[in-house]
Length: 468
Ligand SMILES: Cc1cc2nc3c(=O)[nH]c(=O)nc-3n(C[C@H](O)[C@H](O)[C@H](O)COP(=O)(O)OP(=O)(O)OC[C@H]3O[C@@H](n4cnc5c(N)ncnc54)[C@H](O)[C@@H]3O)c2cc1C
Image 1 (cartoon, rainbow, N blue to C red):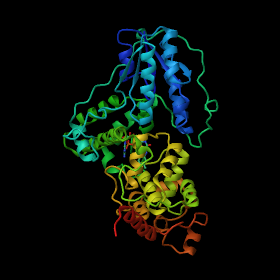
Image 2 (cartoon, protein in one colour):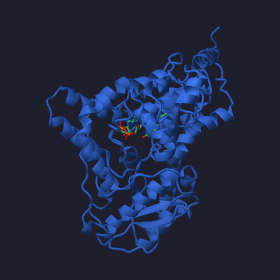
Image 3 (cartoon, protein in one colour):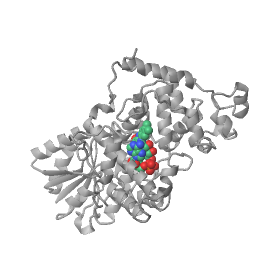
Image 4 (cartoon, rainbow, N blue to C red):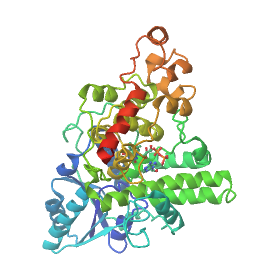
C-alpha cells in the first residue's frame, strides 16, 4: 500500500502523484498540518485551504476511503503514518520554493532512514524548472523566449482520478482543525469556495465565453473578464493539465489564427508566466527577500509608516489605487492590472520598499503564490527579471482613466466616490479643494504629488545605479 501526501494538490483528478500511488496498489491519501508552513500563511489562504480539504475529504468518503489528517512535522508524521498503515512508499507533488525544497529534502532523508520508498512527481506545472532553458542550459530571465518555447512544447494530458477500489478503505474520525485552532483569525474578506467543483465551474464558464475576449478585455478591471482561477492553481484544487486541455479544446473550436484563437493563446501565455516565475524562484530562491537585479548601491527606500498604512487602507487619494487596495481587503483578490498599479504606486510614488507590499499581499491574498507574487512585485519595483525599467513609471491617473474610463470599478470599491463623475475622479489630483469637497466630501486628498514623486523615484534609482 502507498501513501499519497497531499500538499498543493488538493484534488483527486489530474493528480499525477495520486494516480501513480494508486496504479497497482490501493492508495491512502494523507494531509499534514505543518506549523512551519502555516507560519507563512495568512487567514484567507488557510480558510481557502480548509474548505478545499473538507471537500476533498468528502470526495474520498463517498468512495469509502478518507483523507487522513495529522498535525506535526512531516519528517516524523509521514514515517509514523506509513508504519501505522503498513505503507511501503510515499508520493507527493513537487514544490519549487526554497523553503518547500528544504522541507522535502528533510522528508526524503527521514523516509530513507525509515527504509520507506518515496517519489516526488511533477504535479503543479506543465513544464518544470530546468525543462525550458536557454540554448546554454541556463534558466531564462526574459519571458519572451521562455514563453515561445513553453507554447511550442507538447503538454501532458490530465490524469484520471482513482476509482474507489484503488483507494484504501478507511475511516478517519479526526476533525479538520478550525482556523482558530490553527492560530488564525477569521479573514477580513469573503473567501471564494474552494475545491474542484467550484474550480471547474469557473473554468467551464470562462472557456464558454470569457476566454474569447480575454485578450481584448483582460486589462479592464470592471469587466471581471479573467478566469479567477489563481487560488485554485495555487492550491491545486484543479490540475494545470486539465486547465490547459480546456484551453486547447477552446482553440480547436475556432479558426486557427483568428482573433478568438489568439485570445485563448494570450490566456495560455499567462499560464506560461506562472511557470516562468516558478523557474525564476527555483533558480534564485533568495528573491523572496532580495532584489533579483543588482544595483551598484542599495536603493534608499523611504521609511514612511503613515503612507504605508494609507496605502494598505485604500486612503491615498488616488482612486484606482484605493479601489484596488479595498478590493484586496474585501475579496482577498485584486485584478492584475490594478495589482500592477498599486505596486507601482507603493514603490515609485511612496518610494516604499517592495518587500512591504509583498508582505501585505502575502497576508491578504487568497491566491498568494511565492513565485508569482514576488515576480509581480519585483517587476513593478524595477528590481526583478524582465522588470519595468526604473524610468518608466505608471501614472495612476492615466492608468485609471484608460482602464476604468467610467470609474465603474473605482465606484464599486470606493463608496465615497459613487456620486462623483468619472471626470473628476480621474482628475482628483488636479481638482481644487472646493471641487473635491463638493464632489466627494469624504474621500481623501492625494497624499503625495505624483509628478514630484516620479522625479524623486528616478533620482532614487539613478543614485542606486551609481549614475552621476
Ligand atoms: C504585484 C503583483 C502581485 C501578484 N501576486 C500574485 C500572486 O500572489 N499569485 C498569483 O497567482 N498571481 C499573482 N500575480 C499575477 C496576477 O495578478 C494574478 O495571477 C491574476 O490577477 C489572477 O487572476 P486570474 O486567475 O483571474 O488571472 P487570469 O488572467 O485568468 O490568468 C490565469 C492564470 O495565469 C496565471 N497568471 C496570470 N497573470 C500572471 C502573471 N502576471 N504572473 C504570473 N502568473 C500569472 C495565474 O495563475 C492565473 O490564475 C501578481 C501580479 C502582480 C503585479
